Length: 407
Image (cartoon, rainbow, N blue to C red; front, side):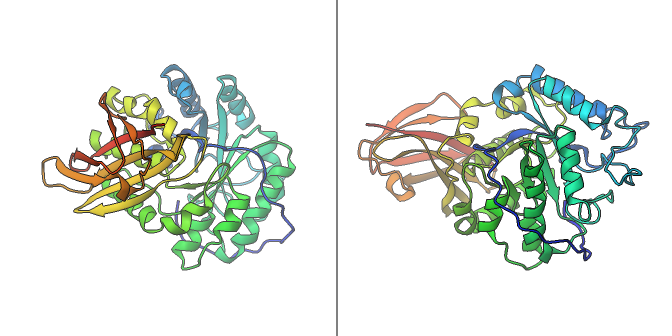
């Protein structure tokens, strides 16, 4: 989450690169923030408040509803889990009423389901919601996370001096590694610098973080999704070269199944996040996701695109008349790569829009051509080199293919 900054001071130490061997494909899971925010009144909202109950329920549903089998493995607590003060020994502690059994027991429950446990903190003096940050307790807090069996750490950047982040974020990662427990490290480092006019050192960020937030928080609206997609397209030549196995650009959470996206818009978010090689971290109420939205989230062919082992993020390669063409190289590889190809529409004129493109013009140059499989339907066909592909794209919708290289 984004908010104001105050100055803080850190002790700078030498920090080696992350090298934890994790996140070889983009992480997948569920996180509380976008849907449940900082609801802490469990008397009024017992099923929505940030509590032990909410995260045990999420873990249960990831398993029982088939999400875990599809690859969604992390249950991540975002802001507002903490007590307002540290304990008498200076250690972080969860709110005792909302998390009466403590974090280690909650972690172990989640892990008993075959899942992994993620936890939020903030690099600054306070979290974005005003709870204790890590800035003066980096080593102690990393040690605490290790003792609590945390598998994934999201470190936000509210109430911090942005010029200290280039040393502070690697330092906290160093202390996470020092615990001996392998933890995925999600950094908000670049977005805070970018928002405040400082150019992020993405080479260094990729050396020290498994994933990082590049841009604004996602909100529950199509306009928010559009804004993020446009930012990633405009900045792709800068950010894409730094992403790959073990380190990923993060456009923020999947909001599919909430209030703000239509069915077509939900298909668009899923397709573009797959093209971008983005983490697939849902933030929704798993108890209330309607079947048609659940089908999108569990689309195995699209998940396979997202999780492709080559780990090459895609780009927007063409834009005309408010239709964008996104292409990502994927396996299998022959004379050239296979590709994921998405046509997305920012049109609102009420009818599907017909759009044609020559395969060569979007980088699909295999002489023998490709087998095209519609990832949101059953259609399958072959196109040879230099052929024209014609689609009809719904307003705010997507047409999404996997083009498998022919020998």
